[in-house]
Image (tube, rainbow, N blue to C red):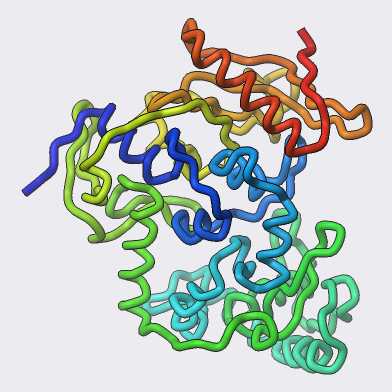
Amino acid sequence: MVIELSRRDARRVAVRAQLLTADRPSDPLEVVRHLGLLQMDLTAHVAPNADLVLWSRLGSAYSPDALDDLLESRSLVEHVGYLRPAEDLALFRAEMDAWPGVEPLSDWRREIEAWVEQNRACRDDILTRLRSEGPLPAREIPDTCVVPWRSSGWTNSKNVQRMLDMMEQRGEVAVSARENRERTWDLASRVYPDGPTVPYDEAETERDRRRLVGLGIARARVTFPPGEPNHVGAAGVEAVVEGVRGRWRVDPEYLEGGFTGRTALLSPLDRLVFDRKRMAELFEFDYQLEMYKPAAKRRWGYFALPVLHGDRLVGKVDAHADHDAGLLRVHAVHWDDEPPKAAVAGVERELRSLARLLGIEVHHDT
């Protein structure tokens, strides 16, 4: 049987799955366990992504100190750019063991494998140094690579950092902490908890299932940049969405029960909007992160926050945390259409809450 959903129903499934209804959660660890991950991005134009995601769910119940405590206690660990519940590492160990991936390998994965092998001595040097000296930032690890890393981007010749990235994927090293936003590295055995290795196929199936719990509705397979996928394989049940082409997978747990929405300000990297194609199909919302655009070509702002109201994405808030002045500067609120009064009041309420989180005050430039 194929479930038939209206766009509104599909949106409500997605919003409920992302814990963005009026029924707010209260425990940051349980939020991460439900969502599955927090993406590490330290852009602090407003606040780092992890803080924005947790605040948008927990509201005044959240403090960045709570996230620090979870990291210090190793309840959460950083793995390949994401914060994950420590117990979930069991689902990634088989992937680490299979690095650089299961056959057939793409050409670029074979090139990476060859580069690591050519620089085996550097890899051994890093392991020896970490074993004897403990956690170190990349800048304190000598570069003993004999073949430089080649890239057309910012990683060109960043040999040690790229080797650490590959060793992290292999499960040999891990991010121990961040000091002044800089990663410090240690042996993975000192950071990750002991535990079982879930077989590769079983782990992939379980990760698809958990991903659907956090997304609510997703495609079985999508083409997406490297990182956490936005597809869910055979998890859930098949569905179609009225007015949208193709088939979806939906978590049936979200098909029952009522829906009470609220207003929320989202990080541009929030999983509700991160897959821009899914966002456009379900929410019919036009949005791009414009921090990489020249200022003159930005429509909504450097790090505009999408506005969720109920089950609709209705606008963008162009804001900046000016800590020197003690102000959350709100340059503009860009509404897609004439907003309901409840949405306007909700945005103001959320801005005041965000300012309290940051220890500053709201200031509207206009």
